[in-house]
Length: 282
Ligand SMILES: [Fe+2]
Image (tube, rainbow, N blue to C red; front, side, top):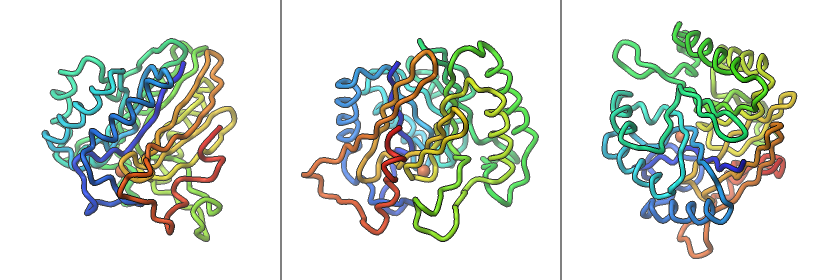
């Protein structure tokens, strides 16, 4: 099967929000129409989104985002990101319920050649959204519940390849990629180690997809690829096209949706975020 992967669309955001490359400042439907052409040209069956769908998680942004995703005319599988929680998690279920082809996190989606399992990285505690990758945050028992749930889901049909989708990445970005003196890992050690352990227990997981860092990066763990991507709304507007067969073999290509006439160009000082050749294809 062939599917596409994007992340961090930050619908509703402008350049005042955190970004690594200049953001698209025009009508977001222009970018989504370009994406639709790519999806159609490559016969893409499903789109996976790793969260930060919206910038502030407001009702209007959620509705606009779901309208934009609807334009693609293919099913969407997604988890939420920290930005999606900024106005509270309770806005999402009602909005998503009205959409036929939107599969939210914490469910397993069985596709032709593989299973998709998207997991939210967040929960509400003391009435507020909490992000467990924060180094200052003590892991909450609900992470154990989530990991047990994931472990249980992955234990079913062990012969089928699986793709796990989360917002927070678990791999450090290496100095070779960033140009910094040390590796950079944004998620907490407890989160990275506990999720890695579950994945290691299930060889059928051939792909971990995540976002949050707005960087193209591919890491390999045994027979599994762990991938993060640049933000979709940041130049050069990248999308991953992924083929997976019934044996779990994966190939990946990365396509830019930028056009020469766009009044926006890449910030060369941060050009590293688009990755090395080995971060763009596999
Ligand atoms: Fe983001």
